[in-house]
Image (tube, rainbow, N blue to C red; front, side):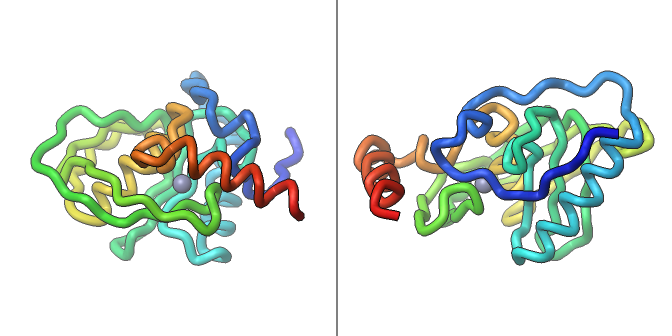
Length: 163
Ligand code: ZN
C-alpha cells in the first residue's frame, strides 16, 4: 500500500490546478485515504477536503457540513438549481476569502467506498461545500472566481517569498 502523506497542499503546488483522475477499481488504499482525509478534515475544523489538497490527484472528497460525513468517490453534479453566494475560505488558500456564486440546490451522484452508487440531494451550505470540493477535482480554486484574481495570486506569491 502506498504511504499516505497527510499534508495540506497550498496555492502554488501544481497538484491543485490539475484535474483529478477518475477512480476505476476501488481498493483498500482509497478507503484508507478517505478515512485519513476525514480525520484531517476534522482535525483542522474544515467542512470538506478533496484528495488533490493532500497531493493525490484522484477523484475523492470528504464533506461534513454539519449533517454527517460523506466519503465520496468520482462525485459528479447531475442537476443544479437556484443561486447563492457565500463568502468561502479554503484550506489550500489560507488567509483569503472570496464570495462565490454557486447553485443553491443540487443533485450529486457518486460511489461510496464500497462502490455502491449514491444519489445525494443537497442545498444551502452543503450544496456549496460539494461544489467547492468538486472544483478542487477540476483544478479550480476560489481565487479563480475573484475579479482580482491576478492581484490575489501576486499577493500570495509575494507573501511566500517573505517567509
Ligand atoms: Zn478548498
